[in-house]
Length: 254
Image (cartoon, rainbow, N blue to C red; front, side, top):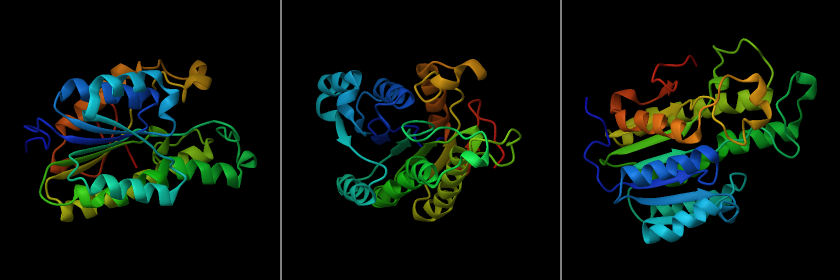
C-alpha cells in the first residue's frame, strides 16, 4: 500500500511544541521537505525561541506562529476550532512533552508521587494533545490524506517496563498511547486515507533529557531524530494506523 503523503506537494501542517528541541528540528525538516507547505506552528512561548521567530520572519505567510497552553482546555478548543475552520489538515504532529520542571521531577519511588505532578504530567503529555486533536477533528475527517504523528516514549510501554520509577511520566505516556490508539480506530472510519502513529524518537539531546544524560544511552542530535521521525511519517500508510514504533520502525510493546 502506498504511503499516505506520497504526491502531496503542499500539505497543511499543524505542529505543536515548535519551540522545543525536537519540535523545532521537525519544523525545519518539514520546511525543507515541502517548500510549498503551509505550517501552523504552536508553542507555549514562541518569543523565547529566537530561531522560531527567525524562521517565521523568513517564511512569511506559509509559517504562522500560535501561542498555546496545554493546560487550558478552553483555549485549546478555541485554537483548534479556528485552525480547523480554515480547511483540511494533511499532517498533525504533536511534539510536546514534559518530564521535569518547577515542581515536577521523575519519581524514584511512589513515596515521591504527588497529585500536582500527576495532574501536570497528564495535562501536558496526554490530555492536552488529545483535546487539541478533538478540536481539529473536522480538519482531519473526510477523504483527504491525513497523518497524525504523536511523539510518545518507550517509557510509556507497560510491557517494556522493567525498571519502575518515573511514575507520572510513564503513566502519562501510557495514557497518551491509549488515547491516540482510540483515535486511530475512530479516524479510520471517518477518513479512510488517514493514519495515526505513536513514535518513540529515541533518546535525544534536548532540555528534556539533559539532567539525565549521564545515565542514558548516547543521545541523538535533534536534527537526526527529526530526520528519522519524518521518514516514519512519510512511509505511513492506512494499514499502519494505531502503531507504536521505535526509531527504526519496529513495533514497541504496549
